[in-house]
Image (cartoon, rainbow, N blue to C red; front, side, top):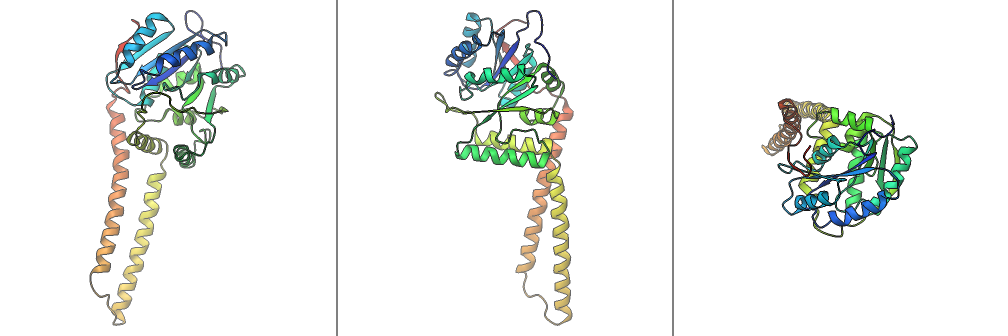
Amino acid sequence: MNEAPLSGDSPAISLVTPAYNESENLEPLLQRIIAVMDSVNLTWEWIVVDDHSSDATFSLLFEQAARDCRVRGLRLTRNFGSHAATLCGLAAARGGAAIVLAGDGQDPPEEIPRLIAEWRGGASIVWAERSPNGDSEQIGSRAFHRLLRRWSGLGTLAPRGSDFFLITRPVIDIVNSLGERNTNVTALLAWIGIDPVTIEYKKRARERGVSGWTAAKKFKLTIDSILGFSVRPVQIMSIVGILVAMLGFLYAGVVIANAIFGRPTEGWSSLIVVVLVIGGIQMMMLGVLGEYLWRALDESRGRPRYIIERRTDHE
C-alpha cells in the first residue's frame, strides 16, 4: 500500500505534532526538524495541532508560520486529547506520507531519515519503538501494550508502544475514513492489519516544560483502548458469573446438608459476606457494561472528534 508522493503543490511528507502547552519546546524542535529535513531532499510541511493550550503555544505557531510557510498550526476549541489532536493533524496532512512525533522533543527528529528509508523501501507503516530502559513508566507501558495485544488480537501493535511512527497516504486515507471518537490511534493502525516495519530508538527526556500526560489521561486511554478493540471484558464477566453461580449452588448444597444432618449454619456473618461479595461483583459488571453503553451512545450521536477554532493559514 505504498505510493508516490502527491503531485502539485502538496509536500512529499507531512510531519504531524499534537501539542499541549509546548511553547518552550516548539522553536527548538522546529530548528531540529529543518536541519534534518534539509538532509533528506524531500518537500515537507509541519502541522502542529494545539490541543487548546493555556500558554502561548498558538501565538508561537503564528510567528513560526509567518516566517516559514512550511509550518501550519491548528488550534482546537477545547482539550480533546492528544489522540484526537493527532487525528486532526492527519486529516489536514497533504503529503504522500505522514510522520507523527511529539512536541516535547522526546521523539528525536534525527530519527526521521530512518523512517523515510523504510518508507522508500516499501513499508506502509513504520513504528519507531522505544528501546527498553527499565524505568517504571516504560514497564507500565509495556504491560499495557502486552495486555492490549493479547485481549484484542492486535498482533501488529508495537510491544513497547509507539507514539512516533510513519504511515503512507493510503493508510492516512483509511484512518481519516474511520469515524471513531474514543480511540487509540496506534491501536487503530494495528487494527487495519497491515504488517508494519519496526525500528528502535532511544526516547529522550523532556528538557523543558511539564508533561500534560496525566494519570487520568493514561487511565482513560487504557479504558478506551480495551473497550474499543476487545470484547474480552464482557467474556470475563460471563465466566465470573458462571463461577459465582456454581459457588452459590455449592454453598446452597452445604447449607442444605448441614440442615439435614442437624448442623445448621450459625449466625449471619457468612450470609452478609456472600451478599457483599456478589453485590460487589455485580456492581463492577454493571460498570463495565455502562462503559460500553456510554461509548455506543457517544458514537451514535455523531459529534465530531474535534472542532478547530483557529488556523495559521486561511484555507
